[in-house]
Amino acid sequence: MALLLTLGLSSFGAVTARAEDTTTISGSVTLNGKPGTGLEVCAYVPVITDDGYGNAAGDCVFTDSAGRYEFSFALAEANYMASVWVKPGVGDKFPQTTYGTSLRDPNGYFTVVPGEARVLDAIALVTTTTEITAATPTITGKAALGRVLTAKPGAWGPEEVQLSYQWYRGGKKIWGATKATYRVSWRDWRKKLTVKVIGSIDSYPSVTRVSKATKKVSWR
Image (cartoon, rainbow, N blue to C red):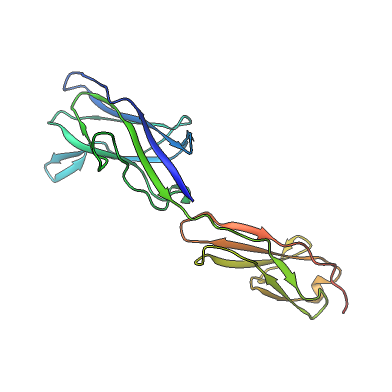
């Protein structure tokens, strides 16, 4: 499923100020039409220092409750090409993020002018995420002492999804019971058993499904 991440910016109008004044870059982030709260936004404004190139924008910042962000810094030299982006991997929501496309530069770069406040506009970032599809697992086999039960996960996707298992006795985790099969023990006597299946892919949110409970474990 493709999530549209828009680094929204209201206008390209710049307010001219004295060169010694603070330069600012501000904007807002929306995710699926809603404010992108608590996302880490980074900016790169290259400046020449005694040690080579530096970044005038400094550290990344986090968006506020309205999805807005702002970078403030002193930039008294000539104009510089800058870029702004949402940092990949935030909360495992954005494992892959690309630079957005501004209205003025297809590569997502724009000009920063010393002493001006820059409010960007229409920079869109698209993150491609994999939506894990999951089925409700079932348990096959008889819930009786000494018998082996098997968790059938059903159809999960995509193909690279990794499945893990956890068995429960009367709603409580059975320590060490983390395989697709489970041998019923005397501790399960007169208890109902369930299995939880967790599907995961690196850097993506996991998905969990729980089976229906078996009948109470019988003697045989």
